[in-house]
Structure formats: structure tokens, C-alpha cells
Image (tube, rainbow, N blue to C red; front, top):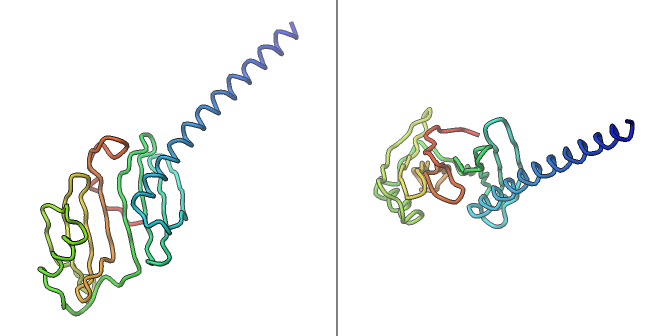
Length: 179
């Protein structure tokens, strides 16, 4: 009788260990795939600084010290689909001066994103500072850029990903998230 109990206990432990290792390897595989996808979007000298999971999503943040830019990636926790990417640099986005015209800003955006469609240029005011806000779509994402009205430098980039086979979001994320 004791031998059967020990055998049964060992069997249960073995099944538990196998189940845990299979679950962990699946999670590890998802994590590796998410990191590989992030690395396609960040400059090669960027470093991974945050990997954070909660109930619904995973946040992965890279830092590029040379460009003084943070890159935040939000993934669906269950599917590992990329929902959103946001890049925030230390460039001062707003100014009280308006040196660049809407046409200048449009040219800057098109040179950086030649695949842009439905480009809309507006201004956004925060306190006394104004910045240009460029919104456009591509086949892969909806993008919102904030540009300095004096230099034309892109200070903020936000991408909401559309339905694309191979691990990207199945629906459009229209929620804007500040990290």
C-alpha cells in the first residue's frame, strides 16, 4: 500500500514538473518573439530596460542613450500581438515660435515615412507652447507624430498596429496610452 502511495505521488510530481516546464517554455518562447519584434523597430545600440507583465498586457521598454529616446512596446499578454509602440525623445516638442510651415512639416513626415497615407497636419497647444501633430495611416499602423514647430524634429511617435498576419494585433488599438 505504501509503495502505491509513493508511486502515485511520484507520478503526480512528474506530471506537475512536465506541465510547469511546458508552460514556462511557451511563455519563454512568447517573450523571445516579442523581444525579437521590438528589436526590428529600435536602433541596434538600444538596450532593454523594462520587461513588465500584468493581467492583460506586457510592456517592453528600450532606451537609446545616443538618441536620448525611450521606445515603449505594448503586447497582448495572451496572443503576444503587438498593440502599440511609442517613442519619446528628449527633444523639446513645443515652442512659442512657429518657424516651420505645414508644408515643411508634411515634407519632413513624408521623407521619414514615405508609405504614409491620409496625412493630416494640425497644431496642438499646451500652455503657451505649440507643436505640430501629424496623423497618418499605413498598411500596418496608424501613426501620430508630434513635431517641433521651429526645428521640425520629431519629439514623439505613437503607432497603433492594424491586423497583420504573423504576430501583430488583430484589431486596431485606438486608445492612446501615455507611459
